[in-house]
Image 1 (cartoon, rainbow over the protein chains, first blue to last red):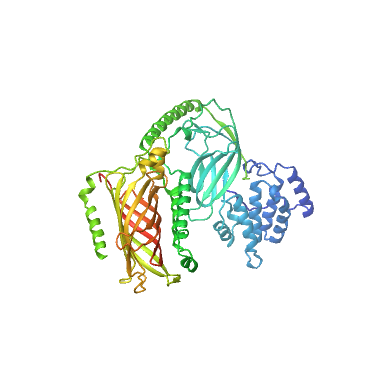
Image 2 (image 1 turned 90 degrees about the horizontal axis):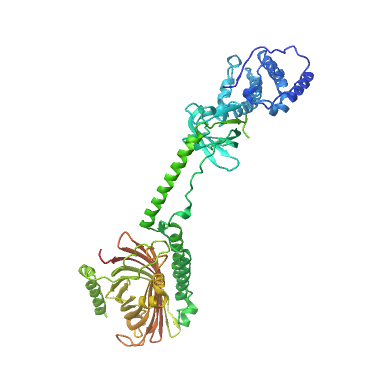
Length: 373
Length: 250
């Protein structure tokens, strides 16, 4: 649901002096449930909303300086405001900084507020009555220079098997490749949940899929990564997610330890290679120096550097052998490993089938933080 | 002396006859691999013919007087032919590009494999690790200082050489990389003139074997010292070559 700033007359236009209002607002801000998620906020009765309505009314009445003055009084407590009110406040400040008369336009300040608003809500826009020439263009400029992505979800979700319909909304400032994954904070295990290419799209989150457990009860990072196909750094946002539910007994997935497999290639024996290289490199240098017999030649000419070149080539050749040569395949071991892998695959399939039955009715309740951390 | 070169070259042509390649096989030690199941060792080449180039620096001293050093490029052929085990023969024929006052050398050598001895002492694993180890007895010649004219390579000197050759695989027998070694003591009596040449001849190098083709590439260092008639000559060379190898059954 895009965050939209509406115009209209404020309800508290005839309110008292600014200092008293500020005090009242701050007190109310302190007592109100400011940290509640965006979607849980009340829309009408909040005193912050009423204050924002007054700023809107100032803008509608072309009293931009007054709107800015009022808006600035909210700045110290802006971070404590709920997300939707913060977005609205940023958009109103941008509008107040960028009125129609060019003489009083503060483009840089307005742009900074717009970028901040887009960071919170990439699909933020003005209502038709709040639009005027230049403001929409400035918002489009801010959107073009920004790369933000957010995830929106209900405060509490009941999720089970993967279904076609998405239960999370991902919103970006432009079409991007999106990847949604969960990272178990206890184990660090990452699981890709869904992918899409869009500017705004529904992504699905599942607790299990095809007999595999994806989300067990616990605390997770819900990670949304956006990659712009036109380039630029990937953007990643992380939300804390708590999953609650009762996990049925599951068969452990069989593991295939590396020690169960035979080497499939004959690799050079490292110690032997190093020892032989040392011996032959040394012999090369000995041949070039110790074998010189004539005293006059020894006195007048130094050892020929060609020997060093060959000694260096020996070391380089041995290094290449140790790092690049894959060795020769051993067909018998390759065949034996294929059998071991097939057995392992059968064991895995049996475990997955057993787990599929156990997980059929499994579901968890997840709570996702309103804002990334 | 030119006739000697002719003889050596004729020998190469004789042993290079393809029909002889299939006549018999000569095995090298079977390799042991560090893995659970050992791979089949590569078949040893029976014939190897190498085109060799040497970027050589020649230094000469006569009765303590040092002549200016010279850089020459020497090219030639090395050949090796394995007879019935443990015997093999090898020859070299090389000449520089300078014409009259050139650096020329050549030799023909009989090789005796010490692989059986190594195996008796250390077992087959040691033999595989050591690779080919051969005793070498060679008759050869090298152009050197000529007393009459003072030319650096005006006269060929004959010699006898006794030494060792080795080719050690790096890793196991299937490894593409191996190290070469040849150490020989030059001593009288000379085979030709008997002019009392003494000295040393040694080579080390690395060889990359392309298993998919019968081709090797090698890079090495060659140092030779020849003392004769009061003159001492050192040849220090970078050796590079490409070899064709004939393998039994191929």
